[in-house]
Image 1 (tube, rainbow, N blue to C red):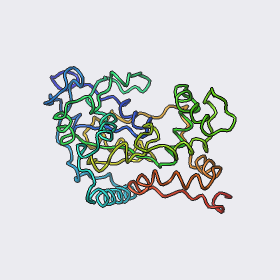
Image 2: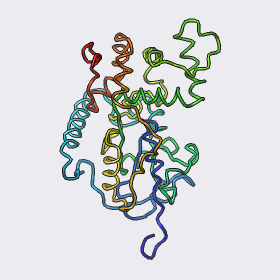
Image 3: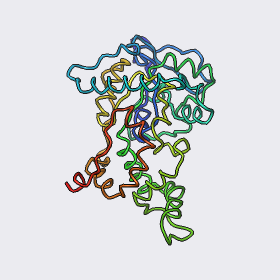
Image 4: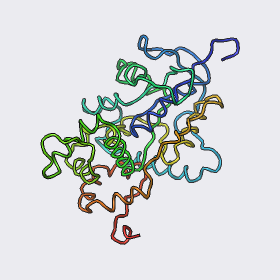
Length: 320
């Protein structure tokens, strides 16, 4: 609680974790959001509630913790590449430069952190439709205000590791995805599948074949290229974090927005087993080489903009 004032509602770390769950959702925090509670103008009635404001670093003025030389190099590479690509003629400068469909996708996935829970307990359940606020929920002037004044960041992941994670989670665990996407994939790409497959035994090569035939701009958010989902030219992000150093980068963001020391990114659940580099290597080496060559161009901007190396699936590498 603040001195002599009402208790501060802590922003939900579950909102933070949503980024990781989908590897594509974005989060916006008003600069200094936890430092001082003040009402923001242009609030949508009854949706966001209170927010925090304070003096936090301005874009371009962020300083990394001591000893983070590798992170600084990676951030510099990403920033330089983004500036070079986004500075080309014809590239979007804000969401209103995007075609309607692309803008709708973007605004539906930018999550606005406003403080809705008084606990960061990751065991709490939230209704993503009613408990969270996205830019698409706001009026155009409210959207522009937040894009101008909020601290904006996204987290990225190795593109193929992200695909493998989505494949394992959606087709191995979630019945809705098995029925909606898995059954269709099996019907399309498996000889003799029959008219009503269960969709719970999709192979990784079948999933890759499906991605080759899909329009990247119409893909599901969990495997849509991050470039199309997050539009890093149309939205000027103050920070691009990495899944590979998720906890450190997340806590760095919390430091920049002046979160209280006890607010930390929640630890992963003990049962969680992320896709490992070894598992990715196995799946890629087991897939037809020509299929990988067809998939990679759809994610080439994710590799180049966010400084991820292309996979080594040569015969020599796969024999190791």
